[in-house]
Length: 149
Length: 149
DNA sequence: GAAGATTGACGGCTCAATCTTG
DNA sequence: CAAGATTGAGCCGTCAATCTTC
Image 1: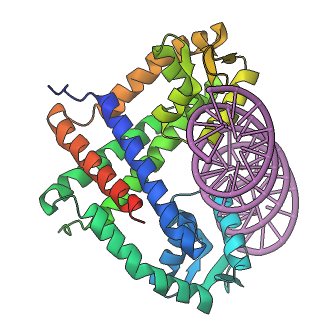
Image 2: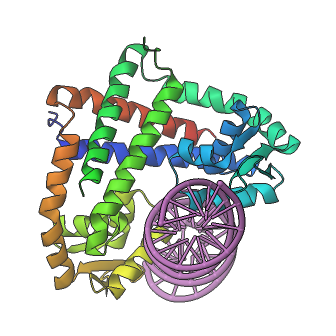
């Protein structure tokens, strides 16, 4: 006998799923000395030919300017990234992948992609579009509510 | 012309939705001087007649023992909770809601529930069961993968 | 003044180490 | 030795304040 799920059940399930994503990500990247935040930056830079404005990163990652700064400090210290001056606007910063950073990404990326396929491939192709739609619907409702708060 | 969503798209959508949940939660609780972690504890205690073993909280919140300790320190300092000795096992701690904690919960809970209904009510009743199922499927795949890592 | 970046303060999470109790 | 709780260190996120540059 299953109870009909109410809105609150959806919230709990969403939180628990996200918690599992974080746990797995952290455990996966840890042997490489990376965190998921750091890998996301490595990943974005790699698909952009290893060169990006820091501002573009902030937009893509939906994260505050402050967070990026500190994470990048650590990645620079680990010789994965390099900061360069912007040619036209001296306020901005260009981020450049170092050889070590690119090498690390090349080593991780295939396994990472395989893992994403394996886990999120459990949603059958027919259900992906509706599932995506529901997540988008929720996100819009959340942002709407956030706006008039 | 819409591209068929691949597994990676689902991951991105899930992360963005969770990010929106956190943003809204933080903004909602902030005027009450609470964080969402603190409200979740307040909430669990309230539905358990204001009295719980700390161990039960750790299990329910899927969080490490360390995290709870510090959050509870702050809530005790804010006079929302009280630590009591366990009658049978002196290693354990019992958490008890103070009058101030119960009062705060009574003030917040109705608005909170209304917000959850409004946001997660955007998923139509017919879609809730499948949506929940997909989240559960993902969570199991994530935990399976985490286990053999 | 506004925009981009950085730093500091604070909350929350993890893990490892420690302490007390069973 | 194992279990429950706590603390400390490290990472990430927020916001507010500051600095440089537009």
